[in-house]
Amino acid sequence: MFGKVDTGTTAWMLMSAALVLLMTPALAFFYGGLSRQKSVLNMMMMSISSLGVVSVIYVLWGYSTSFSGEGNYLGLFDNPFTYFGLDALTQTKTAGADTLYVLSPTGQGLPAIVFAGFQLTFAVITVALISGAVAERVKFGTWLAFTAIWTTIVYLPLAHMVWGGGLLSNSADGIAAWLFGTTDGKATIAPIDFAGGTVVHINAGIAGGILAIFVGKRLGFGKAAYRPHNIPFVMLGAALLWFGWFGFNAGSAGTANMTAGLAWVNTTVATAAAMLGWLAVEKFRDGHATTVGAASGVVAGLVAVTPACANITPVGAIGLGVVAGVAAAFGVGLKHRFGFDDSLDVVGVHLVAGLIGTVSLGFLAKDTGLFYGGDYRQLVVQIVIAGVALLFTGVLTVIIALLLKPLGWRIDKESEADGIDNSEHAETAYDLV
Image 1 (cartoon, rainbow, N blue to C red):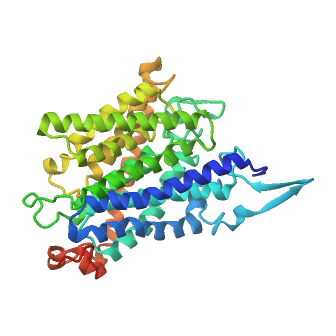
Image 2: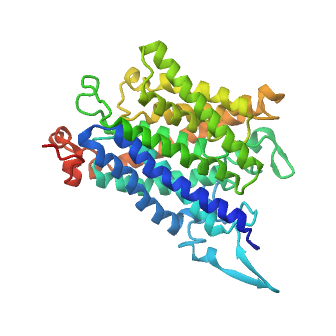
Image 3: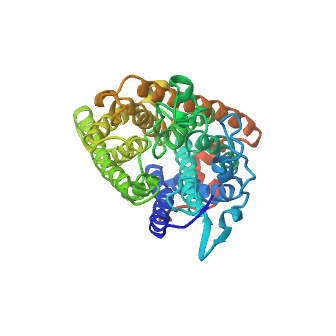
């Protein structure tokens, strides 16, 4: 689709894309600080390497797979080769005195190449999130192979399913339309995932949990204390994540408007409330409100509000944040209850808070939620899309993990005991004398 470019919208989205890109280095600091001293570089490299692998994939076939608008094969993905390399998105046409550009599917005068850049950053951070579940014990080469394959056959199709007109969208051929019919060619009760509750957080959370189980526990899990080696890094990472998340959520409005403003405010208050909720749990349960708890509560609130930020009131966002913060504070104990080593609590924070944020829209969505005069249908749709995302990602992640088994997932015991930084990268973060 060719049309005129809105320079204000373009500037807004370029800035938002830059903010989201910042989130991956921010995650590297967050995860790196939570890791042990002998593993910090590997943990940071797992995040940073996703910038390399996923960015290249997204330009070559990633954008087309999710958003080309050609194919919609079984509602799962588009033609990966329609805009291969993205050069086709930079074409222009002349109409009288005007130059027309290829616009994004969102319209609003946004060049498609800018929209592609924005979506690229989402793909990058999603894979990086998974790495926290398998910290300190995975071969770097196997991780890079996993990143490429998982992005291609899990992330890109799920993004299409939710945002590209596929099975989990408001399409007349989607699951929501099958459940409750259509109105004017769209699902009568549209699924809500404004900025990535299913695509990013449920997706990364379940993938991380499966990999943690598949790869196995760290040496000494359940016996040794794995203390964060650098809590200032954790706080720096959390602060930069919060800053970058405004691009994530407010940027998903597609332009600088009231929806973006509402998303900004809701992101702020939900995050603040989640932090307070997590700290309250720590104080009453453990006797101390910790710095790591505050940082983790921030991330839990950001995760929970992501799918909901444009569809709830600020008061609803506060309530959502409190629930997410409390639930995630308890959720991080799931790994001990069930005996799997989710090293940096990807399941406890991203999966738990992502599910809460997605399903809560059945109660909190303005007009269609149960607390705002709606009926049960929005809740059913939200539960179904969350369940389908869990099943889709879960099954494919198991298959990918098995396919990569010949490469070897684990470093050897000696290397793990010595520290993965030295064995995988021949470096150490700190030279102590």
